[in-house]
Length: 90
Length: 534
Image 1 (cartoon, rainbow over the protein chains, first blue to last red):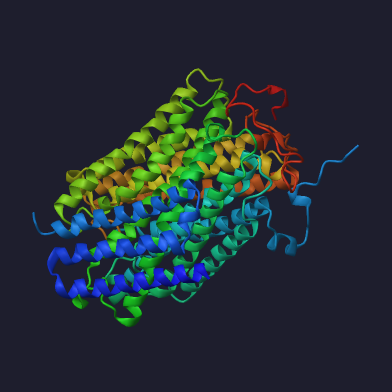
Image 2 (cartoon, one colour):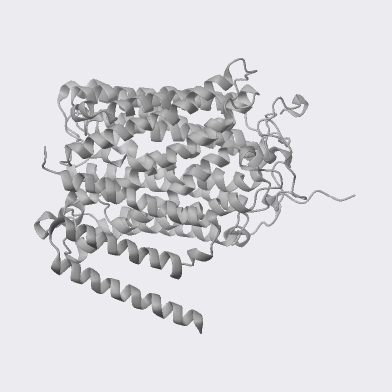
């Protein structure tokens, strides 16, 4: 029962964060909107990883691999953004 | 008296026993047969391309036909030969043997991986039958998503499918290496071949999904007109290149890291000495895998990406040279004062080192922004990546084949023919691709089949080399095939090498080890007793 409750709470939190994403995209503009969106997305991903994917029960080695995957995703986004945000500047 | 258990080859003789096997060694043989088939198809397409380039007018093929031939060559060679060749054949066969395990961690998943590979291959062959695709293996948008007349979605589906085969194999290797090492085999006692496959598997698992997503996005744009990459729909073609190369540059290391692992084994066995700087060679595999993720933008220097991004990528690309250099220097130090025999595996290893160094140094040139702008999209680039991906990987693949063939099939082959093949491949390869460095530097663009007449001499040299290379690639079919029926029986350790795989009979029994061995020493504990040799 406790597990269902927890899953439901996390699901509700995710739904709230989704609402926040929509709100942020309407209220904020420019780079701030982008970073707010990314920040909320990171929180959602964190919740999914920690609770739904069961990372909180895993060994440090599995967590290292999970963090590694996130790190590489971050590298993909960061280096692509270096291009996007500075394109046309030179 | 207990009889030796039958070898894995004799554990069942029906086709069913092969097609439903979960034995990693049999699956390796299935891969050996299938990657060889795709190597022949991809090689035939290469032959067509080189034959067309004999004349400046491109008399053999139409413009469209030429595009389809080189695309087919690229797609098949990259995804159906170079990426799976060493990991899926030799990794599958050797990793459990080298770490003292009875099989991979997930034997059924391993078989599924082969079936997925075959399914992807069938899709590709269907594309071949219905007319091919003309985008190049890179599927650049908006050509692939909006303008191409070829069967882009079908090829994308083929590559998407085969990607899952890679992911499953990588996952299987990672879990196997973590969980199934024999007692006593700590990380510092693992063979370098296993280290390199560990690094490769990390790339396979982390990078391949990005390619899969990218291919789905291409299909979505092409089929449903979603504006993802097409500027006229609000998309960005450079986004495609970022996503594509985020996978495809690390894919170069998927091809070459296993090759580096093979060479470490061959060099140590040839020199009969422990590998110089074992931990640096092991660590450099991991370093190459990690840094390899941060360099993809060097494919995009002239694409219109920001100059700042190009500068960052140029700097990061140069950094890969450090761990690569560590490997080459350490192999050289290992060979120094070694008791070297000129056996075929050693000659292939030497061939690898030569080609890898030329490919690596020209890679440094291409990583420099200024030089890349001059030679971008010329034959210089074609020559460079062939030296690394083809010269390097195929030399190592043939080296591995000649080194572990007696272990895999229990038969020796005529060593002289192996030496002739190694020398011919090295000569043929250089004759094919060295002229292309000059062609590129003089300004011959890649992907063109009509060219200025002054380039013809170099193209003819290159095509002559490719003929020689093709013949050299076919030679092993003859003498290795001959060895299967009439070759001398191989002993358990014909090269006098170290490693757990040499402690089991040739060919190994179905479950590898009667008793799981306990590892008590460091790897490459040479010299080994020579009495058993050959």
